[in-house]
Length: 436
Image (tube, rainbow, N blue to C red; front, top):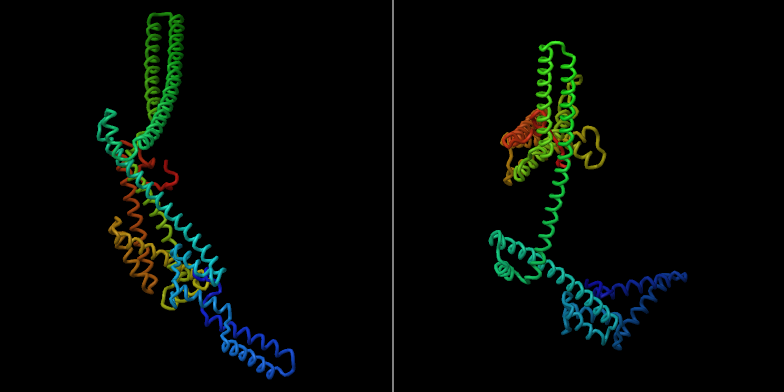
């Protein structure tokens, strides 16, 4: 900011050096105009230096150099000049009054900068105050709600006002609460409307089921009458009546089953409580994470597995091989082997992250953590087979932990009488974004 305000102002010495350089450039340009370049250059430069000396002898001073010197003094407070505080608009304005006497341009720059700084400071104060008021309002409303909840189900107006008056303007806070209550009432109204719609649908389906039963009963009675009319003996008539009763029993059973099924459909499937749903979401996220880790480990395991024909793996570890593969990746000239080496390093990073998370208190399966540490140790060496075996054990430990988590999900659901998450009762992976 200082350089913006003080313009070309650096130091008097820098200014003089630039002036001398400019003079030398002019001398060279002058010398190039005649055949006696060196002689002319010396004469010209000497004349220039003589002019400076004469000017200094008679007390003449470069006006720009004088401005720079005065600005420097005001910035540093040297020579008794008032020191400018570039973080204080008032200091900058006071300095502008002094500078107006010898450097109006500098004074104008100080005034503009002071105004900009004052505006920025005012904006910061305003935003800070707004944030503080918002936090205070939220805290007040939360405290108010908690205290109102202690008044019971039917508090008097005097009790409510006594509590509200402790947290600022009763009108304002009650207004906020009224908005919240209105929103709650709207949600209740939507739920009631939805339930009414469901009841109406249930009534329509019940009427359809009853109509089917009535039609079946009428058809059974028609068949009975026809059979009796066609019967020639009492035995045939008795058999027709028995067939009718069996048909009626079947119709009644079908009717009951249809009504039970309709009731289940209207209620919907039983679900977990909010707290248990939160636990299930966390478990499902862990299963997704395990699947990603298992998938990431397959490639380095395959790369370190010897080919059946060549008896050699794609990736062979060793001091020189590791360094070479690392260098190719760094220089953006990767090869199939160097990319395989990078996949191995990513797998080891996964193990490191698990170890670090466990150290920070994140609950981690003991076998997974043990195999992660083993992989980290093996990955720091140069034995391809030892590293491959460590990768396999690490992957298998993650698979086991995934299966345990799936069983926890199904056990939780079974204990709450909720249908299994998977049709087979086992775990299955579903992306978190698809959960309903």
